[in-house]
Image (cartoon, rainbow, N blue to C red; front, side, top):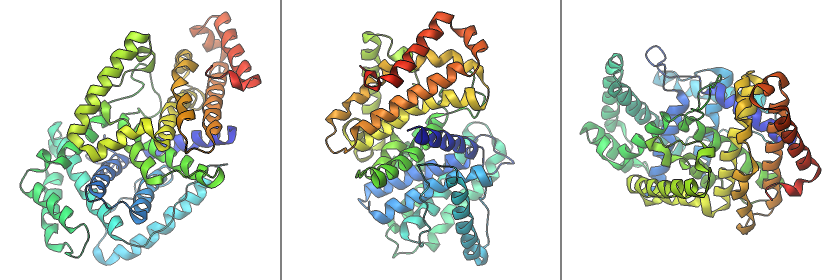
Length: 427
């Protein structure tokens, strides 16, 4: 388990580093290439679901697309405008570079591995390329609405490029109608009022909802869109490991989509820290009602097909694993801030890592089609022990600025008991 935890930390740090790469960097200090990729992925999933075209080729194309964003931690931005006659050569070089960088990243991973495979060009990968332009268009439009008038020319050029591309669409393309519809919506200034526009509004909103807003973050500030990217990456890698090593049968497409959408209900800015939500039975009930109302309103905006995936968080094995990762990552982030960035103020929130908030994962017993239920609870327990133990002992002098000696001793007793008697976790 410690090997897997160390891998999760390494992957998390790669995500942080990858999130620094921005497009149009001269004019843009806010929106990253990962943001653009996430927005592209949401559009892709909507089209696939609307047209009922989910298949292995769609899954592999989206999987590759999401995974390759993480190599920015090694390469920085590799987004270039390439002339048509150089495009084939550029793509060949890019494929080789991506494989090389994943091989480099995998060398230090002990259990989890990036399984990137070069795919032949197909309608799904071409759709992702088309949607990247749409993602950039809606992002530039958001920047304009925020008062960044210096991007006006970029926005106009991108809009014209999209509108003019209608003449180059292949009528034999299985996504011809979807592409034509989007282009016509943009041409007629109706995109924002469409289902696509609603989806983009939500995606860009969660970009502006920040996590850990109750404490000082030294590494990359973590917004909900970035967090969703990390949950997706890690859910994919853990699911692939479980399928290969533990004989599980986790649906990779399903876990990707669930992870992409899992925090969409926070688009209004309702990122409330867990200790407040779980303060007592009254607050638990209140926030449960708020989240239910927000979920129902959200589904009205994004449609029932995508909404079904949000419900799957509570009802499927893929949802269980995605939610497990969702709850483990803030615990891991505590140790990254303390252990890697020497941000000792995070020692002060170590008391919020308490077992009671994790009891929801006992519902694994009700998930009949998981073969290794104990694995997931063991992983959660070891994450808890590892992070809490390391965080409190990282600098005892600073720990004593937040806790009394007696409190520190109680924390130590707790982690030692869990090591000696694992069965006491979540009792």
